[in-house]
Amino acid sequence: MTLTCEQDPVIDEELREGILALWADVSNAGGAVGFVPPVVPEDIRPDLDRSLAAVADGSRRLIVGRDEEGRVAATAFLAYNEHRLMTHWLWIYTVMVHPRYQRRGYGRTLMAAVERAARGFPGIEAIRLTCRGGTGADAFYSSCGYKEVGRVPAAIRVAPGDDRDDVIMLRTL
Image (cartoon, rainbow, N blue to C red):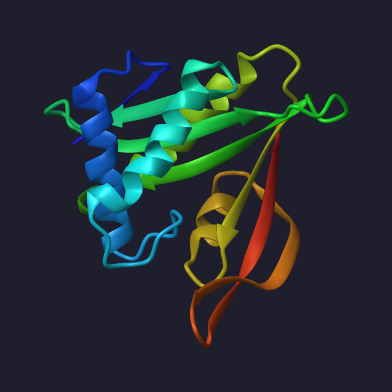
């Protein structure tokens, strides 16, 4: 199976609902995308609405990956920096691959699409992201060419008594 990635797709109701379902499925499988299980799509909708509003106003860009049947299987949001001294790099948020496709190369395909997109934006020299420690995501991003450049111990409270590091990673282009 292959993943087909598209940059800046038309945001219609089918795409909106596909991303929402993906986000809920990833969250409920334990993915570190801003929620902890159990969640339902309605818990996530306000965050998705904010992200898509940022896409609509041009402050974020969207990469969507679809499976062979055309279903939303992966996403990443790229966010421009507003600070005038930091416009040479961008953030990646909400990197998700549906649990049924993990460990099949979809994540690498998505990250390659993110890198291609970033290289096409004028003046962008690097990509920055953060990930939750203790999930293995930092090892995955390292294998995609990202380097750990910082770590804030116990910055993310998943649950009482379960604090995780916020790992900061950078990919120079």
